[in-house]
Length: 115
Length: 113
Image (cartoon, rainbow over all chains, first blue to last red; front, side):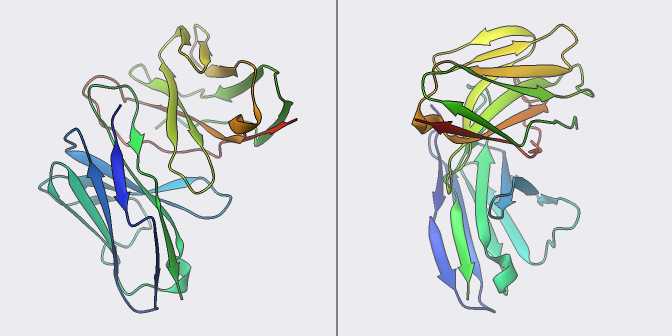
């Protein structure tokens, strides 16, 4: 089945620095990818829709200047958390749709800890 | 986007059949119903998808009544490894559609020995 690879799986960074998370569709092309954030014992919250070759669409309340999304190719979307703060510590998950299959495929997630 | 409502948690024992029901009163004509499973610190994993009546695959069955305002995920003979959060989602996600999915609260299934 379809595979979405997310990297890194975990990262620790200092407050004020930026962190980039990559999401790759390994065996299919994805013009659209999605980024979610999940806090402990909570559900996934959609942050933004990443569109290949165009600007991302952010959900209400998500700061687009803080969470930079780039979808430069049909197999890669990146999420950059800029000027990270401890409250940005969370589990970030991406997903994409392989049109040959039902449902969406999710990456394994990135655990971000800001200290 | 149709909102879904599920029980927050359920308990079961190994070997039992578990049925998790989800209500989605505002489901749209083009919406499909999809269930995902999530283990701690992992991304959700697709379980099953359906539009109406019954769908069965190697891991689960999905029952959808004629009005499509609810659906039931059935897990036969659960084991300890089925302990996870199960999410019911509705959306236009079939064929060429790549619409966003909004997650509800999910159901935490705890399977005991």
